[in-house]
Length: 71
Image (cartoon, rainbow, N blue to C red):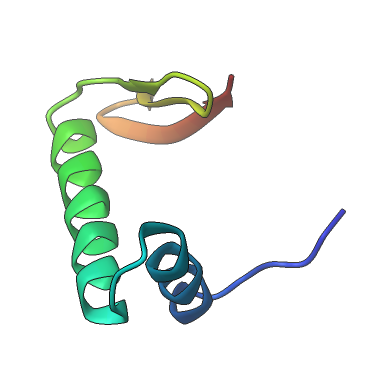
């Protein structure tokens, strides 16, 4: 299995892919993560075709578990 990349590397790669600057790419990443987080906090699932689904599942007594199901 390949290693991990940090956010700054993800920003650099996205900027290159989008042919934009790193500040813009970081804003897109932050916006995506923020929106995903808000949706999951309200109990909504998020499915991205080609990537997978993000969701929370009740565990016990008000405890929730975050899950990702690769697609």
